[in-house]
Length: 159
Image: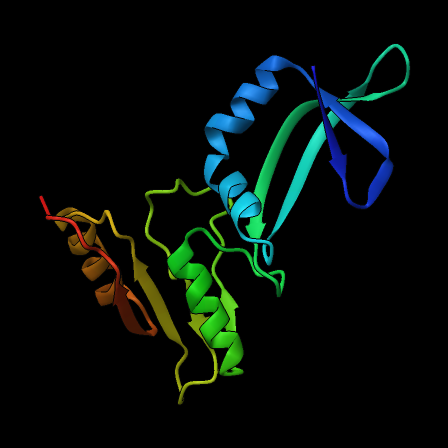
């Protein structure tokens, strides 16, 4: 099997089998890449485990989340850069989180709370965004009670 060392539990290794290892590398490849490539990021984990016959924790289910040096969650390098800019400018905002939403569902990256009377929803359009994504985003903005700002990072040909 495999062993994971958790920073805040350095004396207690957590073990997992090949099935969990393959799932981690498939489902959380982006989070692992950020953690391995950028020393300023952190990788948070939450897991359930069972105790083996010897009393060692064995991972049953696991999830990871990338956070920046301010411990703010992010999903892409564009969002990481946005959060760094907002923090450097000492802006006030609420970070949007997906919770149980799919990765292709549109959510505001942040809600700026230091704007005039109404908060401003800030949307980051991903690089791979299609024409239908833009249409869906426009529909969400039209129905929103907040002011909206769109940062379009898409660079590919649209559908």
